[in-house]
Image (cartoon, rainbow, N blue to C red; front, side, top):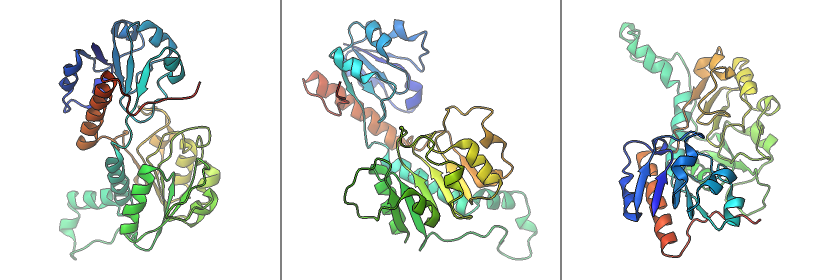
Length: 321
């Protein structure tokens, strides 16, 4: 077997990828451009990809290809239907990053809510050393206990966020983006009511035709003036131009984003030019990247390959043609 990892850099240099050598000859590439792709996969039996696009042309180029392993949950970078036509299995990994994303959600919330950047700068600037009292009340903050937390997308991550928010004493509600009716522990609200009544709104939904531009200026103006919006779902769900307007006009209290419509961020993104910079936290798609999450991801890919070689398929991505 020849196993090719196309974008190992996205998995981190601190993760041992030699574990895949147990299955055959391993070739590891930090990144792979479209021009480099055909030569690297032409003899591959197994491809491991995170964001490198494996489309019809790539599948036709890889003449020995038997298995495509998506090193993520989302698989929109793979032509799954064509792979199925060609008898090529596709697997993904779900659930590996739940705790990491939940932890990042609350980290972003507290950073913004408690003005931690401001208070850290206040001390390190030397101003605290000049104070005539032991504390400093320059940026008031509120407690999340007793406040309403609205979750958009109550999947695996959304449910875990709900559990943790509940442990802090929050009143948790949710809005469904799929439209599927199912019994849940938490009350379901229409999106507009969720936005109007929530103090914290966190997004944990996939990007699709129902969620693209789900949050525009029309939705943002429904929110409370001190509300905090967190997007840990996908970029494109929140209209970034409209969010910049909302932050600079004090329409909402603050926003935290770990995902953007274009990644890496476009240097002309309006969010980089807002006046109220203290109201915005942007991280470079790190919510999924705890050491434990990345280890789980790699171990799950190993198990997917082992199952495939034993004539089984686990975590199969299988769409109807």
